[in-house]
Length: 532
Image (cartoon, rainbow, N blue to C red; front, side, top):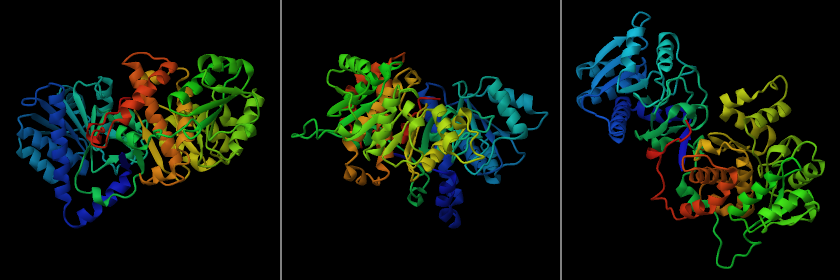
């Protein structure tokens, strides 16, 4: 499992070591890790190391010091290095080491800006070491102008040259993932001590590229993480597996209230997703014409048209493909929420639910639906919430929604965020941009519903993983998002896919994940954010 922290948490973990006089040691560990990451990345891309040119954009603080010390190390490996001092000053010790290693120093001013922008754009490697985790807001003045020119020239995480961010891309909030433009998007972010929450939440994740953590000795001082991300090895430990004497009822029964005359396929896809995710039985309630299509596509599903109270299940899925005019289905959705059973509420059910819910109710909005939810629930004068505001501050938006509703909230997107009302957070980015296709969210709803039915009562499984009873609902939703992303990537094979294909490949993906162990699971130091 990947644990991520706020900048405040990281600085607090550093404080005892800084107080004991280990500040220089921490900086040396960070800078050597940064330099070695640059060398490994160049070799992985089959680019030269000796004779390569490196330009470091260095601020006046410790982040700039990390970058300058790293550039000095790279100069010792035969690389040609220049430093652009964006604030007219730099960390004294790091600057001295850089100059002693043969690096050339340039002051960024209005007059030198055009020439230095050209020099930086022509380098083989650009190290962004202007702003660190303690910075508030973005780049200003000539530093902002320089990054703006580099972006206009196409140098923004495009691979030529290699752009490496030191700890965080300058302008990305380490705590929230908010982006204060202009930002030089990185191919690789080398972050120190632990991953930063803002690197695992959009839009910050868009700018981070691949994230690599360099341990520097503060790890034992870190508190409970601000955000977590499941890796395939975690899925292997937490996903359910039938026992020798299991039967369809002991493996979980999911009730599905979904679909309408306008969107009957949503019910079909939700049922297919649930069946592919291992639930023992699916019971569908809905209009006869939708039930007919469900039977044709999924003969395993038991269809009916009765009330929720007469349907015996362990969890409910409600809302997919429903609209405001589907009064009978919406009433079933409300009845499912009032049943006290775990519920995944998607799409059309969201506007019809009461304002106060419980952690075992999982809401799955996209950013537009979340904006509408916040507009409905937030007190004045905070109701002017638009989709763009949610997309610019996803972590804050999902946190607020969970706090207002008391429910678990999963915000769908390139990076899927999950928040519990107790403010336990997960971030999953296992998918592919090809998942942005009609019906993909319906399949995800089916996967979540299946896992709620199978795992909802298994408190011990999550306690053993350090996840509390009220937080397990967020963990289940994150597990489902990870499975959905992995299946989408497998179904895509680099090209277009349909939602039904996600359900088709899910059992095979589940089987492969189940054979993993902690030892073989992907580690953070090779973790890639595929959606940039």
